[in-house]
Image (tube, rainbow, N blue to C red; front, side, top):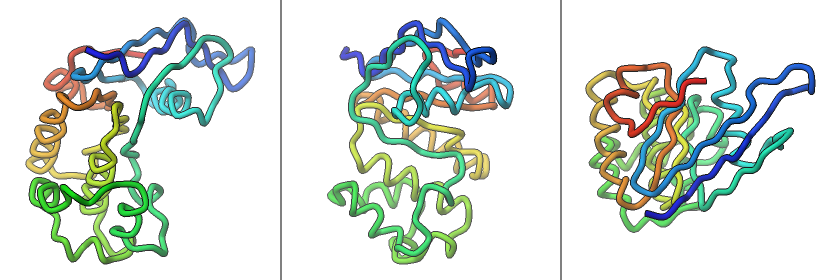
Length: 189
């Protein structure tokens, strides 16, 4: 399988005397789901920022392919004054929209609303919808199901795992049971 993410000897700190992590190596192939776990402030979300190119490592390299991301806070990932549908259309094809609406238990009418008009769970599922419709090689998932109830959380994770033939996934989670259930590997930082 094709390697879609390679972190090599990665070191990062917000200052040279306060290193968050060093010698971080991670490889992810299409078809794999790996989880990153650790305490709050350990640098899990920082790793995503490095992968996305929003931060630069002090040392090491990041190689990746087409990425999409599901943020932990769905309200920060949507512009407040545009409908959900317009924000999905801006970045993704709508050819499989109906299928994923059904799978994610979202009504199409919700997509015509503004982000603040949806519940946290609805908006998180809309964020997952947008990320999947972008057809990435690598899907970054930052606590993607934390705003969902347990039944919907399980359904969404099962749906995401069905896409592992098309992409690889890197999951940040505090939920060790979830990580153990779905991951090929768990990376504790």
